[in-house]
Length: 394
Image (cartoon, rainbow, N blue to C red; front, top):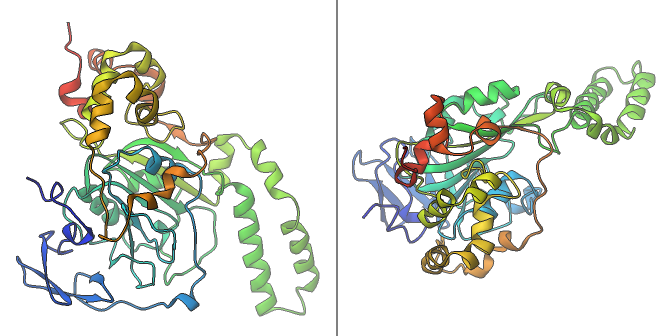
């Protein structure tokens, strides 16, 4: 039985960030059996930096506490995943919204962090997660390519990744700001994954970029040339107070991606075998049904409001006893024993709207089934993860 299969709580997922070997709890410390490194536990929170150091501390009264997740791709994926899915939020920091299956990790210890660690050396066992996401963090990583490889290692085959990065945006250090990225740049960062969608989120549109840059420039002028810049600052104030957001919807995608405040990437970890994330019964139903294949050209894409897993959880359970049986037997995960499944409020939130921007994988548009793509000689991002569920070729 794999370490993942035996996971009963957060501590069952933890590993030495250097060796990726399971750690053993000894009082208020964790010890790596392979290298002997010890890691502290502070107020019940494991601190797993590669060098064993203590983190910076931030107390609740010092923080602007963040609440719910936005109605966007990361929340849609969480609503779509199977019941036993385990999720990692990298850079969660001061997010008070707490779900039993979402591990909140940050580089600073806050009252809301479940784990303190470094994105460049994730302190988790290989294949521990079904979904990893990182919001407004990538620009603050000194080596984002390393962090993306760490995410890939921590995901199961068929696991999902979602990341955002600033593009046209001022410097803002928390505590450092290393990189901004274009859409193509972010795709390079996440090269270990197959892209399902990338582009501009509705809250990253050009109006946000313009207002952020002009506001930062205006404030700088006030600091360095207050008297001389008064007239110009008034002009900048008028521009920033204008209804810039009203014009966002007029930007075609090609224009928006060149001027956006930030960009996103949503992808899947491919392997030679079947997906370890999506239920076999659901993938088998998709293979048998031409209607499902037409409705969901890429069964792996959970970044669409109408996706295969949302169908499976509702109509699929009614239509297919094998799917209903799978969901009935599925075990949930709780990072701590005192959390109830009723706390999974993310599933009760309002539906996420269909993303207006973001290029999708070619499989959505041109490859309706794995066997067709294999016959055409094109690489199909679905085929590997369908594994033994692939239709035999004639």
